[in-house]
Amino acid sequence: MSDDSMVTQPTLNREAEFDLLESHVLDALRLARKSGAGDAEVTAHTSQGLSVSARLGEVETLEHMQDRGISVTVYIGQRKGSANSADLRRESMEACVRHAIDIARFTQEDKANGLADRERLATTFPDLDLWHPVALDAGAAIERALACEAAGRSNDKIDNSEGASFNAGLGIGIYGNSNGFIGRGAGTRFSQSCVLVAGKGENMQRDYSYDSRRCFGDLESPETTGSEAARRTVSRLGARQLPTSEMPVLFAPEVAQSLVGHLVGAISGPALYRNASFLKDRAGDALFPAWVNIIERPHLLRGAGSASFDSEGVATRDRRIIQSGVLQGYVLSSYSARRLGLETTGNAGGVRNLLLEPGGQGTQDLVRQMGNGLLVTEVMGQGVNMITGDYSRGASGFLVENGEITTPVEEVTIAGDLLDIFSNVVAAGEDIDTRGNIHTGSILISKMMVAGA
Image (cartoon, rainbow, N blue to C red; front, side, top):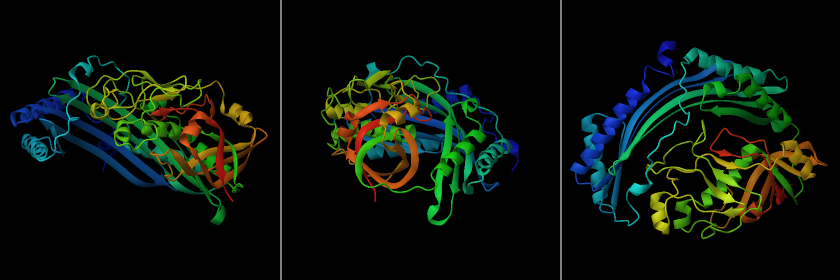
């Protein structure tokens, strides 16, 4: 296969693709109404991408992805049916609509079913700077993956590699519903990663580094990613367990995101209406110290989760989920809001670009502030009970003594209650990780149980 056939920016014209997908969405909506649906909503999408992985200086995989599809949801009264198709030909769309109608006729009524309220639909669509296609052929992608791994393996303490990868992709989508809403969205994504191994036998350690951005020009160099993977891996050599005790715990940014993620999971509609959340009926309560603010910024330029409307067409907006430590509200779609007797928050499809506002300290400042404790750089396992708030996860990282990072630590368990963990947050760092949908720096917890040897 020639390089020319592996281009991530094909001859695809974004506006022409928008028009084509929109015509399919409108056709499907007409077919749904004609077939007996009271209301309907349709999403059509196109995605393309290029993925390369390399290991020990050799290309392992090279993949070009291309996909089109349509999803149809119909409502007959308050009965709902959905069907999907990867074929956009007329006869396939007709079959897709028929399947959705058949499903709806045999499902039970649900009073919460239905389209988003018309008055909440987006009417403005600002440019969020998400579209940055570049003409990267397979050769350029391979070169980048190889360079990333080579930079990591150049460290003389690295003994092996699990490989490096580079990915580039773009997506275009149209959402429409029978309330007259049509919304367009398009975005690009570029990422690279490297996973390395140091040591042998029982002393073997593994770690990684990665970067992910909307714009190729914003990616760090492949050498930076590879070198950071090597630094992180080598720093773990000689790791040991700790004796069980209660101590301060500092979560590095890449794992601090998970703490905010647990908050989001607990205030999301499905957990609340299923009575499966320890934060049910806690809106208006102080969960964090008064200095903590967590803000959703769906219109952040080049943000990983940026969108002017949610997956139901509801307009998104900036809002404070935590203000001065107090939970301001929940994360709701139209369906979950109706189940709870509340109003949608424009979060069908999830939150978008959450930011834990920093408190003015860098990582080293927080290490010094902690004095003696545990810096956690990796967590593992699924030991979080969202019904009770019990938290218990495997962890590794570094012992901090007298305000200095000293010994690498592994095979410990950090445990507590999420309400206690939230209330014991004493600082949030300026070292904000913006690669994903949750943006936070390091988070310092005043005390947690650390179980080891």
